[in-house]
Each structure stands twice: as C-alpha cells, then as structure tokens.
Image 1 (tube, rainbow, N blue to C red):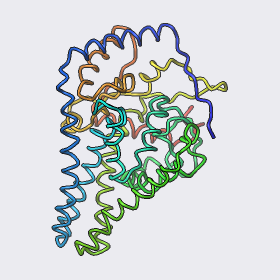
Image 2 (image 1 turned 30 degrees about the horizontal axis):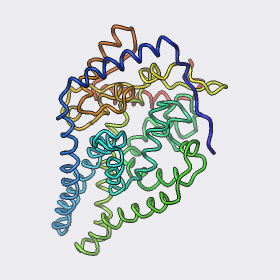
Image 3 (image 1 turned 180 degrees about the vertical axis):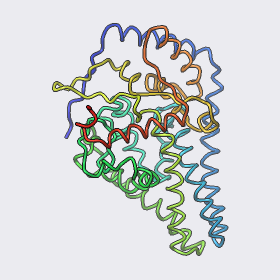
Image 4 (image 1 turned 90 degrees about the vertical axis):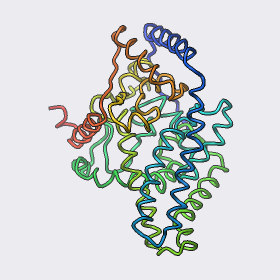
Length: 363
C-alpha cells in the first residue's frame, strides 16, 4: 500500500530563512567543544547498567514483594530515560560517529521490549517529515478511543475522553509493547504501511525479542527466583505503569497540545506551508525550569530545533535553541516554549476540546 507523500509549499522566502539559520547554526556548533559528545557515550553504558542492575537486585530480593515491585517501578522510569537520552539519539545517529554503530546499539530498544525497526521507520520517515498531519504522523497515530487530531471524526465514546485518559495513559507502554508494534507489522490500515515494506527478518526479530522480554521479566523471576507467578506479572505491570506515566509527561508535551497546529493535506496532497514553517507551527519547546526537563528529556525539551536539525546532538541543542529563539524573533517567525506543567495543561485542553463534536467546536 505504498502511497505518494504529501508535498509542502516551499516558498523562496522560507527557503532562504532556513538556509540562513542552518548556516548560523552550523557555525555555532563548530565553535562548541567536541568533547561533549562523550557524555552520551558514557550514558550509553551507565543507564543500561542501572536498568539491568535494578533487575538483578529485584531477583535477589524476590522474597520481599514490596521491594521487588519497587525495583520494577524504577526500571520503568529507566526505560523512559534510556529512550529519551539514548534510543532517540541513536535513531538519529547522534551518539556514535559511524551510522552502523548506532544501528547496532539501537538493538538495546528491542531488549527493552519495543521494536527498534518499526520505531525508526515510523519516527524518521513519517513523524519528522509530517508532524501533526493526520494520516501521516505515525508517532501520534490513534485508532482507539482517543481523538488526538481536531479533524478526526468524533466517536460516541470520545466525548468522555477527557475523563478516561487518566485510566488509559498509565497503560501506554503496555499498548506499545504488546499491541502497537504488532499492528504496525500486520495491519494494512496502519500509516507505516504507506511507505514501508517490512523485510521478513524483521518479523522474526519482532517475535524473538518480544518473547525474550516476557521470558526475562516474568518467567526468569518465576522459575529461578521462585517468586509467585502473580508477583512476576505484577513486576511487569509496575514497570509499564510507572514508565507510562513518565513517558506521557515527556512525549505529550512537544506536539500534542492546543497551542500547536494540526495541518491537513488538500485534495492535491499538499500541505499549506513550507516544511520549515511547518516545524515551527506544530512543535514547541519545554523550558528547563525543573529538574526533569534539565536532566532527562534528551531532545524532547529542545524539540523545535531538533525537528529543524534532527542530526544535532542533544548536547548542543541548548545553544542551538538560543540561536533559534533570537532568529525567530528577528524574522517574525513563530516559536513556542512552555513550562512542563503548562504544556501538560495545554495537552489536556486539546483532549477536552477534541471530546466535543465538530459542530460544537465551531460555535
């Protein structure tokens, strides 16, 4: 089901602005110390050690169910931190110099229960190209009881979505690990099928790593640590719920809120702006006013400049964002940045607004 992609209206003015910003940004990056890149390499070895260390500590203390479950909760937090700080950067080839080294390291994501192949295709080829475009942004694709896009047809159930999201969001990782990846592989209705024909070997990897994940987190504790099977499943549930809550805080804030636009394609498959301007109107930053955003969001806090220049490492995006803000102000371009709490509030406002039928939204 390979389909032709939407096209942007790239005006000469926007193209010139983009090229000027690119030149200024590249010059600035060259002036920054290259030694910063070692920070991510160090994290690549430390963060997985913390994750698997927590797992071993949990196994050793399997007879103490409270401590066992607590370790799995912290493992859930570590999964999200590893995703933001490492997996996302590996996807953009931003940690190791050689791209195939990043690709090999990306298999860490498979060990954490997700599928690295479909994530990379979804993220690079669709989300970065068409953020917030209904039918093309696979990262925020929804086929369930939540209406993300204002242009979506409202279902009878979605009028209550501003209430039941608090029950569904803590299950986000369960959906990703055990439903979403499989739907992307096997459902012909998924957005990813518009551009990708999945190689046979990836189907094998999908099942192999999913089974390995279940065996590691559930059956090893049950068979070797002699924990009760319900406790073993409880550990998996604690990991996914704690991870889901942190993941929602991080992933919902840069795009999916009432202040960002959700452009649609016209009858000719065109998007009514340039690619450069589209990134600015569909994306916002999260300011560094709290401990979480300062230390563990990778490029999800400096997300606007990341969308414009995705191959800039997160160790350089603070300076690149400062340059971007000045550039946007000078050239009367839109730029948005919010504290984390306000961004979450704006997300809820979008969910609440989309709960209304379309004819009521126009009133």
